[in-house]
Length: 408
Image (cartoon, rainbow, N blue to C red; front, top):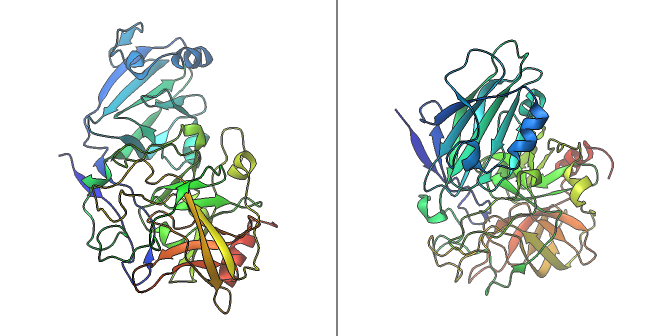
């Protein structure tokens, strides 16, 4: 029996509401999902196969638009290609998690979406990615297991979960849990929403929880601690494109997606001023970390009262507070705003008036020089209280976790 559950995780509908923006998606058991499978002849020349495949659409590769490949019955000999097509008519994006897999030394797994974006796995990369794939836009995903001539044992993979993206309004939510849910919920925008689009390549969106993360010079990545449990810390996305007209998140090419190393995450989510996370990511295929490709933020522990800029991937609705059907194309894309801030005694709590919304959790708190002195974590701007809050680098545990990645 096929099972599924609509997921929209959220945290802490408390006085100062934490600001992750969990994805709306349907999680389907890979064991019970009925995919389409074809087998194709393969001459054993993987480089030649890859070159030809990069010039084919998904429809051509799976013989949905004519077929120039020689199909096979379930083959028992090597080499061959096993192609599996996963589709869902209403999906806006698809990603996979595999629980068991073995490719051996020479076989490969290719994952491709409708836009021509490829992700190529060998055994080491699939291990590093912990069986997860990048996120692909569209409603179809093709997996091609390219079995080498001298594979020995037959390579395999087992899909544990398929995530199908859904429009934001398609997912049920806990009452009051999301900042923009109702007029009675605390707003993270202090008055009128003054956020404007920004284009800082150093910033990334955490998927699936929708938070914001960013790199330091030593390779450490930072976000808010409550984001670790708010929908999953799987993938970092840089160069995030505009969302759909209804606010459905769109995803960058897989080359701009990085796998979070789950065993590297260190965090605290015990409240305002004690809300932080530090983690590492798997290098890209060229061996580079985000800091090498996109740059990194300078930091300072000496935040003083003044003006702050908060930049990140908050949700956006038109007008603000219009509810679950009001998201727009700027929602969960990069925006920024500046406002006054003060650092409370001890330096761990930063109070500010910059406009933010759900998804801004983890955004850098930037001084006038562009140096970061903490992270945004909580929103609480309403008619009575005009302040949002974050965690400063004077938090000793936070700073110690950063130092474990090396000098800055």
